[in-house]
Image (cartoon, rainbow, N blue to C red; front, side, top):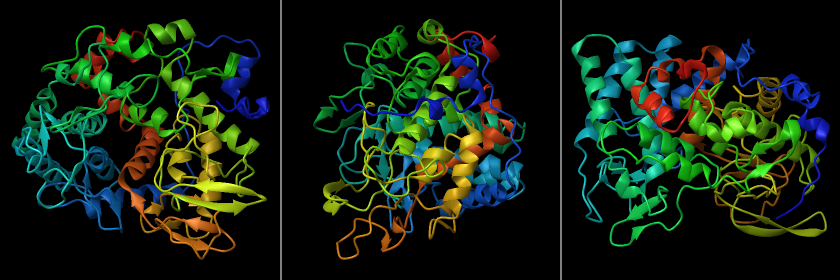
Length: 474
């Protein structure tokens, strides 16, 4: 484990944390600040929405993993897309009928897509779906895994649709019926090991991936959805099996203490759909905070690490920060400031000294922007600074990632392009990273996703079975 010195003032530079540092009690009633976002966020939100609306297949509703690089479909990106369409309706960019019809096309595909244990020709098995699907046929893409977490992201989008389309007309009624049928079909106990933990994935002919969802990361949504299923749900005790692995993931002390996971997406994805403000399970009751506050602290810790910049990368600053999973320039080893630096292609990135650490100088706009609802006071300045970065803001908003330190122009890149002055910038937009931006903006503006998902019986049941109490659950 790497030890990194971070200026405590950078962790406490917010009224909530400063109050805690002064000895004031945390009440467990954290709420997202009501924020009047800068006008240009309208443009960012619209461009990010257009990624999903423009690129979704009108024949089956599938959404590419990335663009403009030719790509297979990502079922997680579909979950984000199903969530984005109603946001587009509420903002006046598309009609309710347009969103409704594409949503119904998508749900009809997943309702009838072939399921089975054959290695090819199937879209899923046991009610779960393969991580990547062929954009045209909808079948498993190559040897990709049957994914518990990507299926969960898809299900969250489907559950959102099932709650948002609430009118009595036949089309919206069919959306609600299909949303229940698809999400209730998953056989959650089948995906569970003898310890009660859910496996990360399964391959035909090979079986389950050895690593389960344990520790602290985006896997929390897997357990909430699995516990809330109206079909074959996770067994009692599954949440306890999950939280029993928390020891060793705590970092900081006092007002900065939080469950750590280095890439910020692990703190963002579950909370895009599930409103954790003011509700607590047994683990959070013992800790004296809630998961929303935990993610707020993790966001500040990510920024503080970038300010400290122990690897001496170029570009890192108080407003240029954000480490998460994203594209990178490639798997390369090159000289940098008198040392040999290792760079990576697509990889999870996060502060050294935290679980799943990796820092190669690559930053991602979605890392900061996906935390907008947690800490708008530091995310808005970061977004404005990154918007001014050369070549980073384009047709669908922010390109996926950039690396100011990578200026090598004579090497073969995995993606993107290099400017000898401003460094490397990716050339793709990634669906899951676009989705985190769109969702965070919606929740910051008007709780656009949270207020809908609070009505979801699956989410309420999952939280209650996990032992959550208080707040809106009351």
